Amino acid sequence: MRRLHTEMEERIKKTGFAPVFDQNSRVLILGSFPSVKSREISFYYGNKQNRFWKMLCGYFEEDIPESVADKQAFLLRNRVALWDMIVSCEIVGSADASIKNAEVADLNIVLHHSKIEKILLNGTLAYELFLKNYQGKLPYAKMPSTSPANPRYDERVWRRELDDVFRAFNGA
Image (cartoon, rainbow, N blue to C red; front, top):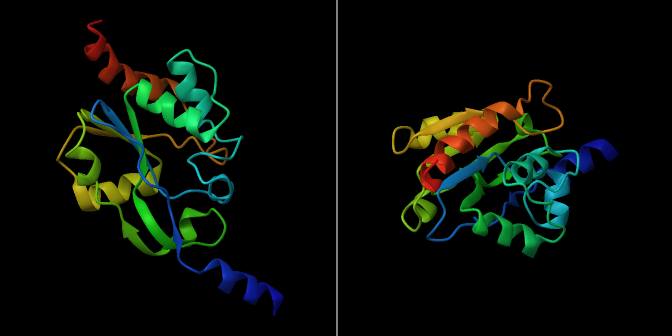
């Protein structure tokens, strides 16, 4: 009985976070939906085991920011927009497979007010939702999920795709 009650509590619709971007953002990274740990701190990639911040900060050769405000400033300073494909859903724990009644993000909110050149989709669900709703509007790439649960993570793929945007921007 307790397990059923807990699952029913978890099935209450949850809302994700607002996008982080400004008019100078050049790449949009889209995940699926915030994990439990991310929801606890009210910001993206809150699980310290997730490779996202280590990968992105390593790419820009910066230390991982501690606070949410510092992470937001890092993203904007480096012209990276960040959001999730799902803005609200019912979910059990952090498992993408448990997501039901998902509301997909209106990417035009970001795309019409920035200089996005490429969209990087962090994981399979983000990629599938993007293809279903937005395919063809801008160059995009399916990225290996930075989740600690992904044994096939490959940082070289992330670096190659980031280089595709930022090398051209920096004139390299």
